Image (cartoon, rainbow, N blue to C red; front, side, top):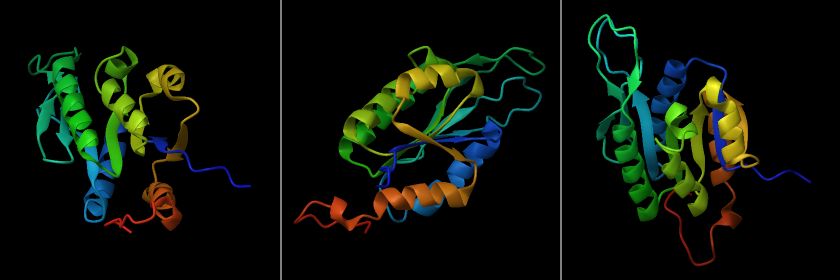
Length: 185
């Protein structure tokens, strides 16, 4: 008997910037056929910075949440702005409560491992039973596993594999309760 498809997909095997670009491309395609919630990371675009953290962009309304503290050109340090991530997580929780087919959360990293960042949004999606697409910073795999095992599957950073995962969750017509018509089927 086939094992049921896990509702959380973790994309690994590529640098974070490439994974975020992949998430942006996939969500642009998927938005026409489903209700998406969540946030995807975007670069801050500032030259000569050691910190690559930039913004989290909402998939529902395009709002940008800063997740970095700019220490100036030439700075060797990187300071994440947990406040921006917490505001983004609250917005994603509202979007989940309003109803969605998929939640995309850019990454489970330092803030989430410490109990902050997007962690509440992950929890809200899991509690609501909504599929989640994310990535996990290599340094925080153990924290992720403690948080989400056995709910996830690891996928390579390949659009066709991620698309196949998403299609497998959406395809069963039997999953739609009797009397309910789904706009995305």
